[in-house]
Image (cartoon, rainbow, N blue to C red; front, side, top):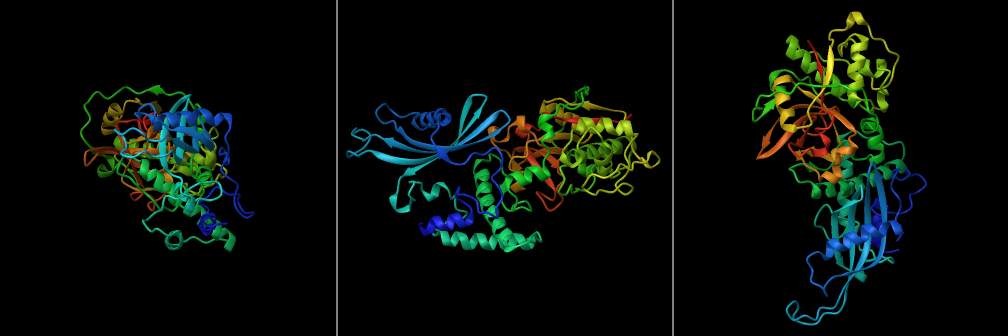
Length: 460
């Protein structure tokens, strides 16, 4: 085996069989395989996009194709590797000398949503036999380097140094050397993923090392996200009366005393509870003038419709608060991050709600409502958030589909940074994530489904 190939396999950057001590591949992803009928349509679409604008006689032909597919909701993401053969160039208006046929190796990523294709990535280069393995796959197609160093060994040393800093910064300990090696492999893969997300982002966000960088995508989703948001209908809520005022150009409830400190849900998919308590905290402040930090643990333990750390829906949580008779404070019913026996005491309840409402999906109307009525509970697709560091995130819509919302958060404000409109979003992953616990998402484009599930409690 070539030394470069050995290095890449060691770092976990090639799709190879996992060692006995490693985790299984994420559900929904198929391994690399020979061409199958399912790959033909996305491969032909990729070829069509490659040839777009080329004159007849200069268009490439499709050669061998291999690929894998990841399915989620109503979409399928195809990662393809294909050889393309460009015809000889004999046209003196195009090339000065006749050129023989050229074979290219291309990596394509094609998204299929309800039968509609979109090309997300195209990376083509001439086949170079000096830097290919026995399957004619260039290393550059697998390894977008984090720096300009030409030697993979330099990459390995740099990655080891970055991983060491990560372990120190986030106080990581692993049970064995095998576990540490596995986590470094996951970390290296994640740095490549973060770089790809960075390259495709249309905003100002920076992606890279975070406290979640040693988790596989499947681990992160299972532990920290909320699959029920896209799968369960939840309770129906009446539509709120719109605010007809023109929203001010910017607004931030943090500056007005309506937002508690950033909290940390821990290793529990309880974002739904934090989103709702954040909304109720703001509503109580606006109605009563007192900001109280309210209990998410009460909802985990006592909301029997939702599923505690396995996920829940804000609409159900509002109903549970009304049924229970209110919310206790964080001090009286502190957060534990796992399901316990319900110990709610009506005598200790400090806050109540009268109703809950669904808000408009129009972002201009959402901004007007927020500026006048307070922070808003919303749900979003958490694409890229595992590696988000700072800036305004604006992923491509097919990568951050509103059909696949999986994380509940709190809108606390909006504004513009250098003419880029944003929503200011309070998250529940602690202050050592994002911008001191906050996430900034592009405003006005329906980014990541931010406008799909907006709601609020009503306090009379």
